[in-house]
Image (cartoon, rainbow, N blue to C red; front, top):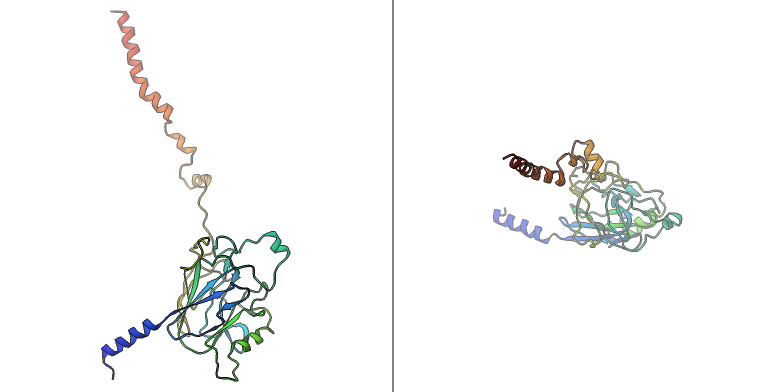
Length: 280
């Protein structure tokens, strides 16, 4: 039996060996980079999102573009503009030209990264396929897939090519119900300066969603978040809430009135003294 000190040392060594593995989502078209991800237990997969609006879903090798039935994860959607601030929880604004001529297969240039990333902690080394569930352009069907720890032993259907081939025959991809789970949303330390941080969680349908924590193959976390941006109250709104408006502030004496009040008493006293002197 190992001594307690040996167990502690082994635990510290395993923790020190864990690494963060960046996975770039949508930077060069409908791709995950890398699309074959080698990871050990304890490693953290850091999904970094580019334009326009992508997600990451843990899938099943038996049926492409469909969520895993157990121990999966779902990032929610991360709307990301190609040129400006990236705020999750709202549909990405699109110019009229892109609405008239929609590119169904290839996303536009990379632009800035999303202001936040999605972290998934690896809890086993079995092969796991992942896909983007965006159906505008059918991203999964058109090859936006990857595999964590693909089986390279030969004659296996748990490989990138096998899953990509199966996905090419699929219809629309499926997003898991219930919002984000199996991972954790975190600030992106690599986001471009033009990206703006957002406190809202990524959404399941470009609206609102919850942020969870956990690792695939383990317990899923739960949480909540809103994609709605709370607007600051207007002047009229503040008045309705009982706070004084700008006009309401005029109830206090103005500077002119205050001056008149301050100087009125001395002037009246001088006039009274002058009139009194006439009768002495």
